[in-house]
Image (cartoon, rainbow, N blue to C red; front, top):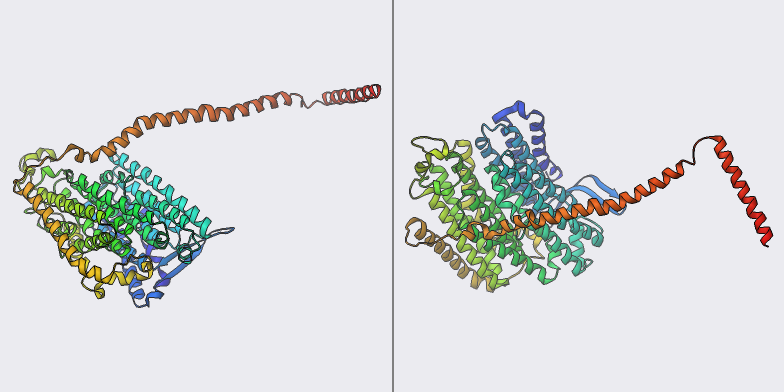
Length: 637
């Protein structure tokens, strides 16, 4: 099957083409089923590739499939090639698997939408682009997918573009990601200049062999990190992601749970040998940015009232955990948390969509409450997701988050404290969300008219096509941690699988040290999670503690508003000044030179009249002048 890995991205692309040509004819729901089957087939093929690779020896688990020579220009020889190795296959597995469930869910969620087939066209294109990103054998193929998911995210976030907020959010995501893309492109230029190739194999081999200078490796790593901050929503480029909630909920789950936002984490893991030989401060910068982002986003989430905004800031925070792991050299832990996060965050987003669907598109948690009675399956599955992200054992999020904190404690105890505080806030704000939505007083009766319903209003459970993905994801959120349990090296299945990709760069903490500390840190993690849950219950369920949610947290520390004021105020004035300088000075000089030349040419052109008598006269005058010159010269001499 390794020779046919190109079918993995081809199948979603084929689904997109079918819906492009026949989508309107297929209609609702058949166009949705076409897209879902295409993505599901891609998942099944990925499983077959995984099983074949699993049967190979560790050193043989790498296969490059060259489709054609893409850029044969002098020394720049770039093949359109795909790479199947443990990292890319792991990414492809959960990208296609989670995407299939989201496609299935969207059939019910988008039912009745006027642009139903177009939505699934965009979803399939997004999955195709994401697969090109993770399967690319070189930076250029990855960049094709990188830009593809950026473009598709713009289409999907602004899908309901008749709403101004959705149109603005789509443009905001597109522009912010272009800033990060500058770093990726510059890193590509530098990598080719230093290693003579854009292939990951060649670049990483240059790092292994010492051909890549430390300063060059550091520059490449930091430039790629700039791109990662854009795609994976890290400070200071995180601000596009909360606004991306304007897209339909399946988009929120697809982009913010399993796929696009994990691109930066994947990229940094892919070039781990380059990061490994970089200056030490490079890893420290990544860890500090990750820790700061995790804590910053968690403080904002505690004061949000939009059910999807809470999950959006939670995603930013969890991505910060992954970069904290990358900066600590814990690449396996970062991928582990990426996978478990895909399970429980997709579950939470789809669960929120089920709530919104049952609440007639209401998203304000202050108008909900007691929904577990009328939406029992949604409530049960959402609670599973809550326990997973809160870090309660034995749910998946507990194991992956603890793995990160173990390595962070060994690398930098100060950042470990930041991680613990973030974990406490995560348990707190997620418990707050569960209480406001599923427990307490049923507040929807007080807002019946807000939904266009006069009289008694009762939310309803979602259709089965939406509930099946919730149930599957809830199971994965419970058992997902089994891929990397801390009790024995024999249980480190993910670590053994990823070893050929990250083994030389992975941080190694002493076995004795880990044995002595990991159980203590496990206990601390459990206590922290339960403390956060208990405080939240005391505040929101028991009303034993009165707190005031600061306006500054609700407004995200005014960071977004400040950026908007700068861009719309002094920034806009600066742009207008630059436009005036360009139009009147730069263009004025260029146009002035052109007009001068045109004037001179116009004057000279009159001499070329086309009349023979004029040319004869000029020849005669020239002859007279030449004779006069020679005569005068003879007299003078």
